[in-house]
Length: 536
Image (tube, rainbow, N blue to C red; front, side):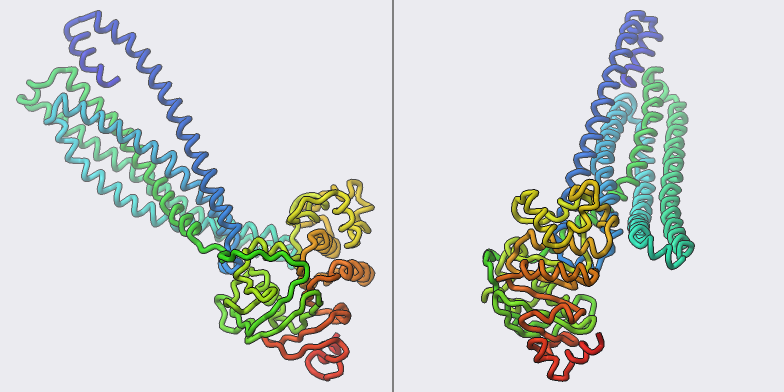
């Protein structure tokens, strides 16, 4: 549109050419139509690219989350991880979809306007070139400021997410301990810090735009002064002079846009650094190629030692044990003795030293993770349920297609039907988030039903009946007897009365095997096991 200013003034008005003015009237409509079409196309394209980038990066980040080793989650809080998938992906998509497109568009506009200015008067355009380095210097300073604040803002968002999540997860304890005011004050501190970082970001944006426009206004003033010189004035037509002034004024908008997207770009760069570091994290070790597909598996722990990251005290020290296929072994000991660590290493939730754990005389790292874990049914005291129906929770993770009859049979064997029969929707009843609509004992029965349905070769029970009453435990023990028939069973227990029937009991203290044998033999030794038994 600016390009037609010169002929309209010089020809249409200066020479009273009505034909030029009539042509201009038609061009105005056509130009604005094309401008509107281009605006719609670019806006839609930007929205499409932005949503596509967000979708792809968020999907990659979520998939990465699923394959990280357990140790990574021990060292990083959940709020920070949630912030990466939600907040960081959003910042990155805005920067490298919306902001990049705007940057290209505004840069093209600047180059076109600048070319028209040079064509009409290179002398006046020189004034503009003088202020460009000054504007570039300001943008550079502002960029560094944006980057510094964006890094703090990103960290602050992680703290807000983490504190919110903890408040939701621990709502009952917060109410019972009467700490609502204390938790609210802690959140207020974090929330206010986040607000302050946002205000710093907005203040930097707010001050940078007026400064850039003020410098540009000096350039326009200088153009007017230079144009007053006779030598320059004689070379200009009214149309050329008007075109240059309009072009310089029009440059303020793209310069402002570039300054604004600088904020987005810096936040995007910080988010990109965080996300790409996350995506580069080492996934679970899974270089094994062998397949574990047996019904009666032998297990060997060979001089196993293990220390958790961030600690100096070994969880296990020189632990050796042979477990024959089809036998049941119970591990007992005090809290922190290393019992659960054995199960975690066997399941490869943590990476054990090579050649320290064997199944059927093959090191577990030589098996693929999927085939190894497919042969395990793991029931712990920390039951994880999905927000779905009872039936879907029982079949969750089953490595084969199961029928409704099989699900009901597993539920019956695990004594789940004892409370399901009173529910209007039966097994189609939703359990709520992590089973909040169920009691601890009911949740544990569902986990046992899941293990029964899985029909794995190796059963690991980590305090599997700790939340059950004596009546329910009696029924569950009968179900477990059927479940564990002709299978290798590892039981971790504090309640010694529940393990007297096993083939062998292994006593662990401070990560070392100190006693082993059947219940009667260990009780007769008058050792550590006898002391544990008498304490109960």
